[in-house]
Each structure stands twice: as C-alpha cells, then as structure tokens.
Image (cartoon, rainbow, N blue to C red; front, top):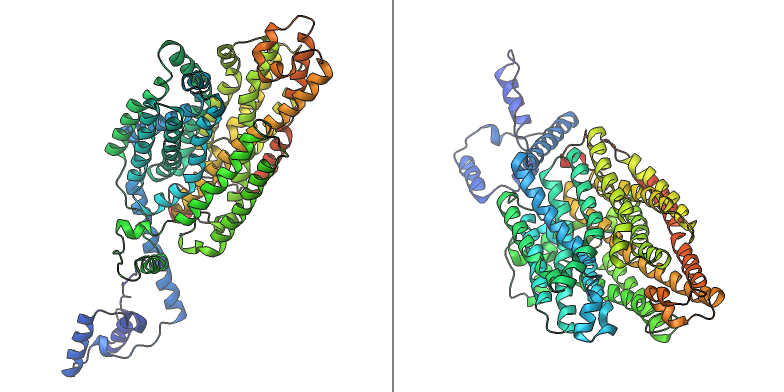
Length: 624
C-alpha cells in the first residue's frame, strides 16, 4: 500500500506556532516511528544528545477522526491509482493484441482439436497395436490429467509470471504430442496422452487469465466468444481432419500437426505478451511457506522470499495429488460400468465408494488443512461465497453436459435412422455446431456493445431446454428440416452461455482471483462433460437393451447393440424394429437436456447483473 505523506498547507494568516502545530499534526504517527530503520533511530538519538528541538521531537497527539478518514481516503486513492496504472500498462492494442489473440486462438484450437480428432482414428490405432480393450484409456488419460491439473495451474498463474506459465503449458503439450506421434505401443501412447493433457489443462486457463490481463473488460466478450466458436468448430473439423489423416497419411499425423502450430503460438506469446510480474505474495502466506520449508528441511534451508523455490512452496501439491486420485476413481467405474463389469459389481461399487471417500478427504483438507485466506488453497471455498461464482459454475456444468450429450449421440441418430456414414454424420451435425459458433460470436459482440451479459445467461438455457424437448420428439419419420431447426435452437442456447459465464465471473471477482475463479468454471465444464457422457451412455445402453428385446426379439442382440453399422446388413423385416429401438433409446438421452436446461436457467439468477462497460479493466472495480 502506498501511504500519502502530503501535509496540509498552513493558513495564510496563521501564526508561526499555529503553522508549526499544523505541520506536527500531519507528520507520521508514532506507530510508524516504531518501525523506522536503525539509521533513522540513530539520527534521532544524536538530535536528542545535542538538545535540538525540531518538529520531529515535539510530542504529537493522535490524529483526529476526520484526519484519519482523510488519510485513509488518500491511501486508498493512491493504492487505487497505482494499481490502475499497473493494470493499464498491461493492456494491448492494435497489432500486438491481434498477434497475441491469434497465438491464443491457435493454442485453443490445438487442445480443442485434440479432443475430437482421434475419434475416427481410434479403431485404426487399436488395430495397429492389437489393443482394442485399452482404446478407452487413450481418451481417458488425456481427460484425467487435464481435469486434475486445472486448479493447480490456477495457483501457478497467481504466483508466477503468466506469460511463462502459458509457454510452459504449450511446451508440455507439444512434448506430449511428439511422444504420441512416436509411440511404439499402446502403453506409451496412453502415457504420452496423459502428458499432453497436463499441458492442455494449463493452456485454456492461461488464455482466460492473460485475456483478463491484456484487454479491457468490455472488450472480452467478443474475444471469449471467439474461443467458444473455436471449440464448437473443432467438434466438426476434428473428426473430418482425423479421418482424412488416417485414410490418406497416418493416424500419427493427428499429433504431428500440433508441433508447428504450437511453435507459432509460443513465438507470438513470447514476442507480444507483457512480462508482467505476478501479484505480491501475502505476508501470511510467506510465513506459512517458511514454516513448510523448515519442516521439510528440519530447519536447515530456507529459500529467499520471492525466489522460485519459495513460490513453489505456495502451491497445494497435497490437494493436487488427492484431486488426481479421486478423478481417477471417478473415471474408472464410469469406464468399466456396463462394459467390462456390471454396474452392480463389487469392483465398480468399490471404486465409486473410494471416489466418495477421497473426495471427502480432499474437501476436508482444502477446508481445514490449508489456509485459503492467504491463497494457498487449491479449491478456494471463499470464492463460493460469491453467488456469481456458484451460478456460473452450475451453468457451465449443465450446459456442457447437455452439449456433449448431443454432440456424441446425434451422430448415432443419423447413422441408425438415415444410414449415414461417419463423415456424413459430421456434416449432418453442422447445424448444431455452426449455430453455437455464430450465436457465441454474436453474443460476444452484443455484450461488448451493451455491457450486459446477464440476458444471454438467462435466455440461453431457455432455448437449450426447448431444443432438448424438441429433439426428444424426433422419431424415425422426422424430416431433415426438423432435424436442422431443432439443432439450431439448441445450438443458439448453448452459444449464448458457453463462454459468457467466463465474462460474468471475471466481472465479479478481484483481479487477483481471476485465475482461480475462471479455473473453477472451467473445472465445472469438464466435470459436466465427463459425467454427462457417462450418464447418457448408461441411459442409452440400458434403454437400447430393453427396447431390442421388446421391438426386435429376433435380431442378433449383441451384434446390433454394439454396432450401428450392422443395421444395414439385417433383413428388411428386422430393420424397422431395430431402428425404433434405437429411436426410443435416443429419446431417453435427449430428455436429459430438459432438467439440465432448467437447472441452468435457475442458476442464472445467482449471477449478478453488471454493466461491464463501466468496470473497464480496473481491478479495484471487480470486487463485490
């Protein structure tokens, strides 16, 4: 904090004694004197020895309440001005902003494509390595590390220079991609995918934090809308690109393509992103880190405050380790249930119980084991006292759950009913994805123009709920027009919310909390995605099994249940029953979006409605 030392000017007609008293009243308080340096104390002692009488030696009375109020206002004003100037120095404009944004868009495109580009390549990879039973882990390894390291990266961004954290994340992702391209067996590929996931976790949350650093708040919606558009577009481009690489080159090109794109990203970020220092570490946290190092080294080593090792001590590695553990214990039964093992098997139930137990220990550790008030907590409960934080996390969870459910199961509808190929299914999904892209972009520009983000968060879930209800009505006789219109309605609803929850949370927290606040929203999105797919798969699998017995008892049960492509090989007399079984199973999946959309709608009322045009990029205005 910068303390004002300005003195009140004496009145023109005041006597020397009155003027002298005015100067004495405005001199530093006795509390500050007790903290003076030794050199200052020695000067004071010498003055006393020579019996010098001056302003500093005259007894001072405590400032009046009005004077204390004036001093507080002056201090707050200078601190506010200093922080505002520091924030404005980081704002980029023109070509620098363009280059930085292009670099971040390429990084977002990398991790977004990496989530979908492998879908057509996985069967070929499994055949090459003779590892069909491990194919699920190629995707799961990437997801586990991405979710697990997300919150830890938020702590890195709070304690280290954000430009270097971003470059580190992209570099780790590039190393993981290189190892994937060179993998000689499926085990190496799974490990390499886990490495890439560690980098991917840092890329997205770093982009969100750096955007908050280099842009005014009112300009962010259109930029964040572009991020959402890239994610949506990659859901279509990824499978098409992966299929082209696999058919005409090699599945390894799904990873080789990441290397030049990542290099361009690193170069652009290195050249244009300001090398701004991180926020100062609170004194209480520094003292706690000192205690940690004393315990770890038995008092033999203590790194200097502000050093790399000292800053590492601020990170909650214990919480991160437990987070990895309970995420694995969540993904394992979701992968096993209904596939390798029955849902009621001892192994599946046991892993779910292990997940619940470790989750409880993790929450207890974050609540009691670390002091979240000084920033050492991986999961800051204090942020959950902000209703906007809770509302945006819930909206992110339910919207992503519904979106990924539609993205994964609409292609099954196209292939089962229309007999479409995998490539054709990607094309048929374009109305949904393009509507997400366009609505996210339009919403971003509208918010930047008006300053209000809340209407998008309210009306988006309404359209999402309506779209889900309309998809639930689809049958095998539905026209292509209905499929297109229903997808557009749902897509617009998703696009209005997808990235604007980030705008909302950044407008309602202090600048120092932006990394952790946005990480919690992103964490909620990823968890919503994995839980949504798992729940939808369970609903679909159970409904399809019962429907096949009901509508197509003579069809080859296991063959039809495991592959949509077998429908075309069935006798004409069996196809209608099998198709109807698929349709009713899909209807049960689509209905999942109705309660999720309703939950997202009611969650919007927890979000504070603010005009971001008045907030600018001033960190003192973000506090609530």
